[in-house]
Image (tube, rainbow, N blue to C red; front, side, top):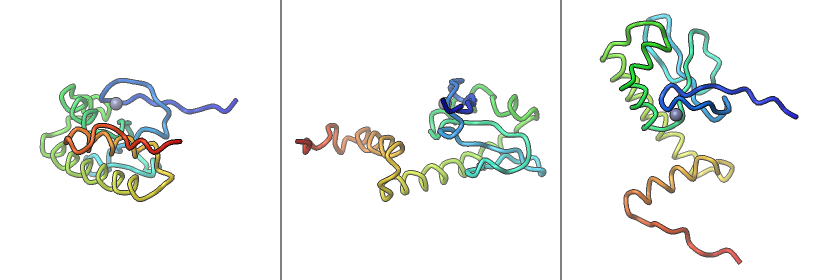
Length: 125
Ligand SMILES: [Zn+2]
């Protein structure tokens, strides 16, 4: 049996396989950056790739706790923009890359929420 490393999302508090979470890292400058490779040096924290978990973490002041420093509103605003850009890039990848099935579900849900389509096309035989 393969061991799957687990990490806890600082937004929803759920434990998930590390590979399905996104790492955030504290930079030497005291900023927080999205770390898609998960390899940047520095204190890290993990979030589900969702806007909801980001906002939950923000409300719970989980960033300050996870990074053991006072995270300013300015830092959070910058991080939010970076997070949004990261999620968009990920969604774009999911819709064009056939191997990105896990994330395609999120993108589909997004369009359903906008009322474009609520049911999948029934093409399966
Ligand atoms: Zn989460």
